[in-house]
Image 1 (cartoon, helix red, strand yellow):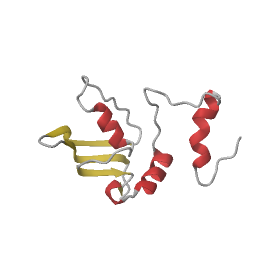
Image 2 (cartoon, helix red, strand yellow):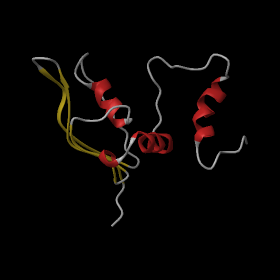
Image 3 (cartoon, helix red, strand yellow):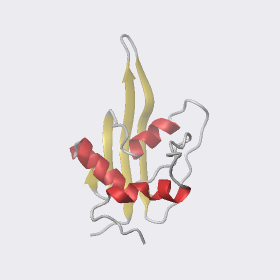
Length: 123
């Protein structure tokens, strides 16, 4: 049966390990995002918002738990496959925009489309 779930997190954790201490940035996070959903991630500084967004965007991997995008288990993907999935299904606007000064706003926004297969036409 086809589901409308685009993103599914189940008991996600992100742990940063130091010499003598483990710091949980995220612990036991479960979330389903369905097609058409709008969500807001909010909280005080240091609560794990950016870490969660990095995991959702496949910029980092969870220490534990399961993460599925459109029923694809992200644990099974290598870096190239993660990049392909990110390119097809995820869009980001970072706090620091990292735009290319020499390009127009339109060209900056359209730039990721040039890496799509098949390539998008200029029109």
